Image (tube, rainbow, N blue to C red; front, side):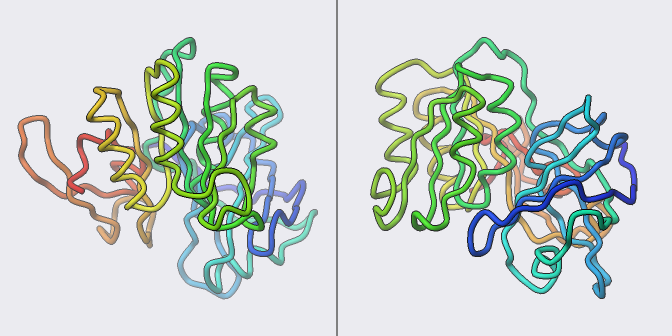
Length: 257
């Protein structure tokens, strides 16, 4: 796995919701290597461990990486205070991302909460052949729907409390989408219960499904074994894999839910 360390100038910084922030940095070498679904490790002032943040989008021509994250602790709270013109110390791109093969196929992207950002660059590749099913707790937490729509994707929105879109779960909308048209592949990122449900729906319909797992990480490069999850080999043998090194993206059939 090839990765780099760069001191990256912050080109733009926006606040999307009370807790969600959008930061774009100049990182030409990392942008050249980046793939959909990968992540980076970012140094936060005053903290020994870097924070793993999914890559929301990348532009290889402009040499930029975009990160959309939520404040979840002291490290990401510090990140929320950075300003345009400052720099971030970033290691990346890390991990195994989504393999985007047939862009002419019909793809469904299922995102839950802050699991939504790493799906955006993939939806851009599929354009009008993509459906983005995005779920959030409430309307005030909704992010990136305009970005997915601008990419050409059909956007289906759900909220737990019904304040925006469908009142209920993303899986309700996924079933609706599959009942109304063919689907060649499902990409998903979000809370584990959501991923488990999406994987079950895909398995019932024999649709290839790739999931991006969220686990606490320390090193981000496979050295500390702190992000191990149980997986299954093609022969049915169970083993542990590291989300940072072997993932974060796995075939849904590999994961022992």
